[in-house]
Image (tube, rainbow, N blue to C red; front, side):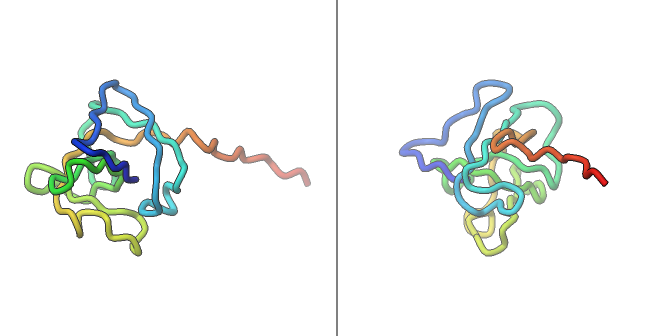
Length: 116
């Protein structure tokens, strides 16, 4: 997800904040247009978590990426789509603002039992 801002990226002010995903970098896990809930605080970030963060080299850019490893007091982040390189490979270490806890739009499809 990228959200271009003229100054610094917005801060997450509430414990739960809605974020709209833009761009293909997290496909197939998250797609352009998905809406997710982000939790600020709570348990510490672990490798493998999907997070909302700001790259230190691009403070105006709010991104949704996967945390890979703690590094330099921040996190090395990666997108799930290997064809898109707008992650730590390009921008370096990021500061995590929150952890994605749920995708709420579009609604997940309900699994209906098949009748035999």
